[in-house]
Image (cartoon, rainbow, N blue to C red; front, side):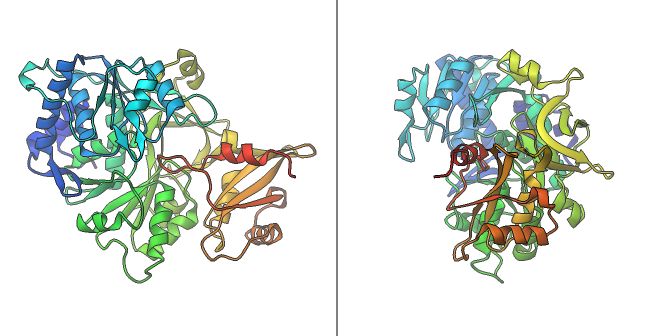
Length: 502
């Protein structure tokens, strides 16, 4: 059942949603960071002043404004100010450097670019100048300011493209993904309703606010009227005092975040890591069933995992009231309005939360089928109960002697091995078999060295078919990951291990 106030459920734009929430609960906090506290009413009022300052700089409805900023209260203020103006926003992950930033600026034709100045040792302003960016301004702790009386009326509709998000570009140039206010509201609503949160909860934003998860999370806060703690830089155990201080009830981000919390919990078994915490939630990367069971058992919290992507910020989400089997082995169910079709094993999507396409019309044409369903490139199936089970990626299927092998099936089994902290399974070129199966693993501190015969014996005992057994094992100190949700970058592993052995 939709438990949000009726007036919020039909907001046309993100600014409309903020204005309605600010009118309902102006004095309730929305963002917490260190000693700072911003209420819903202050978010609306201050964002309008920032919007007026931007308007004085020349930003108008439809103006493309790129921003590369860390997870801070000021970043949220700037983003809502741009939403108030009806500008087109192009958020860029703050860890990206020349290649990705330059590409985003060129392709979006950004007329303004907000940067944090020198942040974590990198001079973003100098980089922006070197790349020839237009309208550079710093927006780390000071923001443009002006009189809201100078502003035009806020945008009246939320179906125009006002957001350009960027895919990771791990194997080629990034893609500019086109979103509307309505598509982001639809995605955030799915997350909010699935998690069954209340106004008494306290959330946390530990991932880059420039990620598609930023507006996802903000929509949830606006719909249900509860606050979140923002982390400019997330690291454990350093972040734990803030989680405890603000009595966070909901945390997470992705599978890597669950594992980080779990590793900290194992340092103090018997004492709850964050006493107020009741739920870990996230998505963005596969979740082995063993991770679910370990979190529930050892941390004494519930874990719900979902499925989303830059093109569709929220597709399915686990329900805290689901059975342990469903929560461990599925990605949850889709909300009303999200259509899932399985075509030749591929998951395809249609609904309001789906993006409008890409900046490149050719990429848009290739991404949608003739019925308007987005091709995700993910493989999966829908159970009789309506839950989605992901079985891998089209590009992640290993074809050995003509037989298709799911990397995810092997990875899920390896996740339960006591001497493995994390694992990625890849296919490598092989003259005789087409591809061979290679397991690349991280080991926990103090674990005994692992050999291929031991690994194969373990997988055979777990019931893995003989033709799926790894033929190569590589042990690494750390798997390569991206800087957003710490997703493993398999293309780097393929590049590294496809070279002939010495």
